[in-house]
Length: 296
Image 1: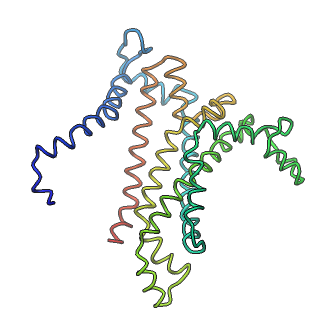
Image 2: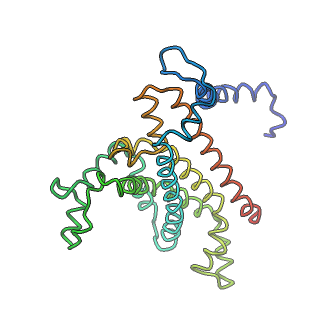
């Protein structure tokens, strides 16, 4: 059916309810956060207008904010490294495994598990050897006792231990996206390339990787946005500790808003996070635009 033959009334009936719901769930809270970011408010009493004082405090006076932001950047960087790994693994599964669906489903299993379950599982793995920590006991058993650490209590390595768990959990998610994208490439293209002598790595270089760029971009955007707003894994595993060594932007915002009851200042941090996610998406779209235009 041609879209032009559908009346605007019919379109409104089907589209407007979902659009209104989306606006109420997404855009209205964003506008409310922007509004309260200019106020000093504890969430209960009267709000007092303070202008851009909250933003000045966030950027110049908050000693936790910038370290938290840098840890969030580390989260995003490692999430980007995860995507090529998922792509190469998807290529390997497609090429060498006859029935890869079971393996893809197995990799995806951690994604559907609760973050609380994942966090508690890895907290036990990271425990000291005296408390039965699996990782430290393995290191000791293979003669690498000097590598054993209090993984979640050492400020120098705690954030990287948490990041690794997040990457482990969501690798299967990005593997599924990449694998599905590769599966949708017509086999006729590979057969034609094989006739011309392009097989193995050469076919992946000139066929698979260029054609999977749009899917790769989607996976990359989801990974970066997800890492920028990560909260649950940090709260479950460390609560932002030791000290503030694993505090990220979202957990810092949660602490300020719901534990310190500074809703105005917490809204300021949330606005910063929204802008960071928006800029990241625009930047990635710009970087991938040329590649997509070349493919088309």
